[in-house]
Length: 213
Image (cartoon, rainbow, N blue to C red; front, top):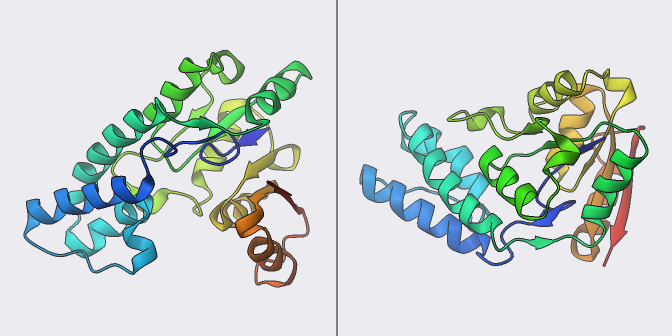
């Protein structure tokens, strides 16, 4: 069983809002470079989008600087993250029934580990935590390589694995890796994601989406 982190396991920015994190990251990068990040409103409020686009818009040498800044913010945020209802029990139930469990996240591995330690969940996954590749935001999901890395850690084939994820990027990454996907969605995005999966361009016959909330 593969789980995305922010969403299926917890709301990582519940106590340290994502728009605030994104704003501080943007300001830090713009002050360092003297350049302005030209982002859409939705991109400007998403820390991972700021991280993903900063090297392209401000220079490749900013990739590691941006990653360091965001990792610090994410690790702080993980301390006040809000557990997703049923998230902890899903991890425990998966492990209790003999399934090997991994976390595959676009967040930093340090933030994931911080949360798992706080809630006494680390023993359920062991070393099977795949955060984003340091200083390489282009390798975040929807690139399939994080999922492929998790499969190697678990020692399982793609056709024997399932990813529980919430953004469309998880669905795209699962499809590219040949892994089935359970799409986790709250009310606000359920209809959008369901339409994308059922009638949209992905055509994922091995994907299921569930709504909560």
